[in-house]
Image (tube, rainbow, N blue to C red; front, side, top):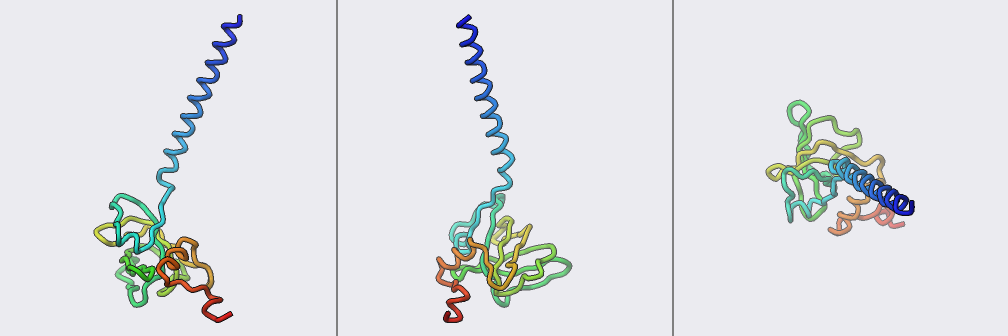
Length: 151
């Protein structure tokens, strides 16, 4: 009787372990496409990622580089003050997207051009994504609005 209870306990523990391992593997498999690492333009210029790697890039839309092409294709450069990366995007840009403004794009680097599948822009005049602020501060380009006005 004691041996049967012990064997049943070991079986339950093994089944629980297998179920835990399977659920962890399924969660990891489901998240593989949902994790996109952020890279600043300086990081992309220094160590370009492979063309199949999807990542996010952020910075300021460089002045004088925004070109609206035929149809819905738009090209521009994103900079963090240290380097610029050309960007190509086909689609509708957010309303607040403009030169000199903060943005984050998701996509791949293809032959030196970041081909974006999604573009996000700031939502008001003071907001900028934390990753972009950190990258701009690292390059010595970012100044907070209150620092600009002298308050």
